[in-house]
Length: 371
Image (tube, rainbow, N blue to C red; front, side, top):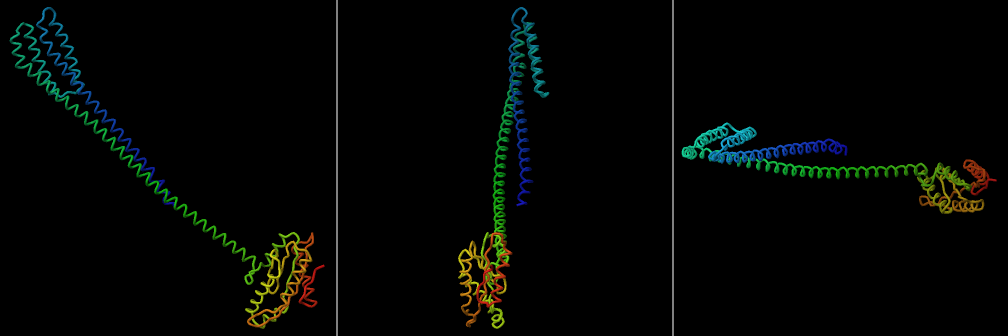
């Protein structure tokens, strides 16, 4: 997951930055190409204007045949026209060949106008056929070719600009699509990794909880009989407001254990725990304190209920046990104590122990009540 995060944090911003730079470069190139197209369009317009001026200049030659001040006016108009022509040639940054053609045409036209000005019409017509008109036709053809070239260049520049922009936009869209796809895939991988990590954490938490529950169960229960142990007894007495407590000490257990062995003794203790569970109420708790000592907590019980349970315990434990296909008889001495309003768990345990000790000292195999 850390590797994915590092890949996302390092890779995507740089790719997006490169995409932005690409789009910026294409935009600048597109603007430049469109600008070049506009320049070619302007050049074509200037060439058309120059062609029109040359036509207008050619048509002025016959005005010199009129009377009065026509030659003067024609000369003035020619001066204005040629001034505009020079401006256009400068704007076009025309080649020396084109300038030479225009100059040659002006020279022939001036010669023809000079002949017309002195009335030599025939010589002027001959000059027009031999020099002026061919020069004009050649110049007009050259201007037309230049205009077509500028038109073609303008269209080409615009077409390239449009195609470049379309390709760049397509590449950008494709790139963004790839980035989104990769990002979505990495996101799904990251999400799955996160889910797996959460599952592992939950498994670990459940395992820890089960372990803690097992540890607590082991800490509060006797490993042989599975009954709650002395530590659990302390918690039960502390939680109950006025319980009755019975301490059960087995009589003659040690001789049986020594004669038949520890395995038989453990089996006997397990059978005792089962009989104790059978003699108590569902709401009561049977506890093994250790060795051959047990306890029974009568929850919310009075002295009468405790005595009834003690009587059943003495009777049940006094019946023979089947240990290793042999009948074994033991007994139980039970001490009974009922909590008073001011008694705590430790005091109740001492009182029940004292009552049980008295029974053991007296005759065994019975029960006694702490008074």
